[in-house]
Image (tube, rainbow, N blue to C red; front, side, top):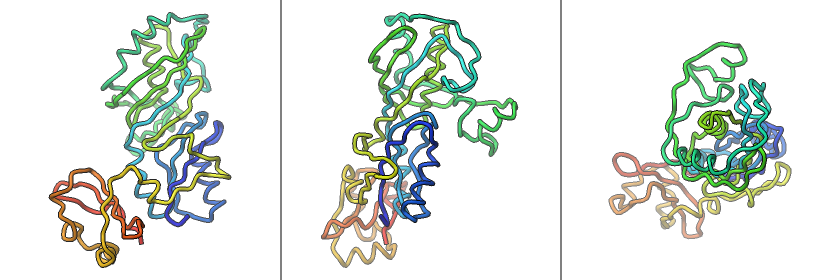
Length: 283
């Protein structure tokens, strides 16, 4: 488990950092990180990594995500979910599926949204939830995100179950709040599960006590590879400029994994302004 990617199906009721803390205790490895926080009451895929593999996490975090969410309409809360302080309850018994479908169409594609008041986003070095807990108001700017698709799976009474595919930085809670406001009745998240973090599925994850641990080569199977000879491997491990080893002008992808003759992953390189540079060298 020296340099590994770990797939965890996080249960609801514990934080993402709780998972990291448990992994550190179980494995004895101190350097463990994750690719994107899951809310405490959300469940689903948490992609973690150890040691040098933590430098890969931002690659996964930048990929698209898929969520299974339940929105409850006619409610507003301070956290934009059912577990916060309820600010308004209209007692709505049912919603119009056709109207919901029409409004949802307005939220597909490039949109702007504000993070929820209770979130980990930092403003002036302080997390938003800290401002909220202290009752301090702060200006929150809209952020641009991309919603690939929102599929309505079911509508029952005042609740709708949705499958949402979205970009990094999307807050599903904000989506529920904004769609509810667009309908004029309010909306909150009442259930949330992350199904996918490109290129990983929650179906391939284990629990924190029996996680799915992937070697780096397997975790990067989606990435194009370049095979180098043994003599080049030693140069790479010593940080020799990659474009003095490879013909970088012939490369096109944003990322490549560099593997030796035995398919051992030696490094990952990424496209930069002038050629390519190392994202990580595995030693």
